[in-house]
Length: 207
Image (cartoon, rainbow, N blue to C red; front, side, top):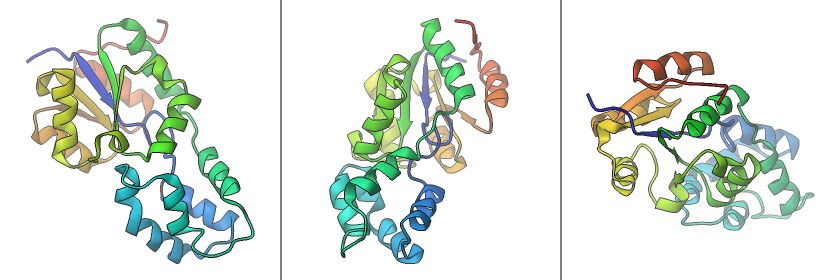
């Protein structure tokens, strides 16, 4: 079996918290006194376009929140939205150790809207760890569509069996596996360290 030369990381739920997942949107609905079902229905209608870069944050907010007058501003809602992102320190420690080793091409492979993705890259200094960002908002396709995994493999010029993909959602892993990638189902940082070692990837937290 080929050695792992590239490690692709999901961001939300693995390296960081989900930046705008269902729980985050629920908190926003409660904080701003929104009709949850209406908000969720409107989100579902535009989510794919939002995450693949076909609409920007301003249009997303207009279609989901500000289609009628509100007692709060777009800036207030945007700030709340961005504040939901938090780092996962233990996982970031693993990412840093692997990046510092210089042994692997480190890249993200994630579904995320443009403005949120750029905010998270900057806030958590992700350029220090990752050489490439295969985000749905940049590529125009999202997990679990096979095209996003093919693009990651082709652009990095890695054979699929050299690629290790880490995600917290089983469906995303299944599609990567079908293309020949190795995968790890993320549960927590301790188990991740153990499972990386089964693929020959040794983690040093003292790099």
